[in-house]
Length: 107
Image 1 (cartoon, one colour):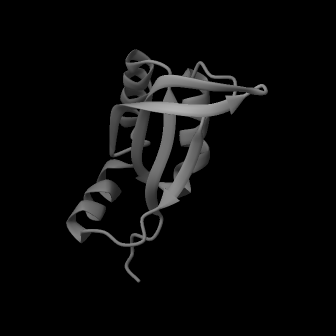
Image 2: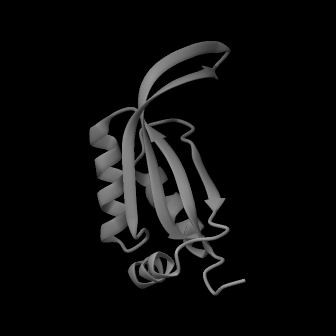
């Protein structure tokens, strides 16, 4: 195992590109994420007993998962959804220079 086992991707969806950009900027500026990529996606999901189909924005937040609680709190502060998706996936392996770059960007 390497020294970068705490790094991962946090997935978040938003209802608009503006909200995605706002959350992405806040996380990077606060040094809670090294990078946030986002793209338009189509989602089908059940909410309050009804099946919905919406265009959303998927954020891929590259961060140190030991900072998850702080990342989550910042997202909740800025997010408009009642129950936003905020889930973390560990990076099991990665290009060492890239993982080092994440380490240097996240406080």
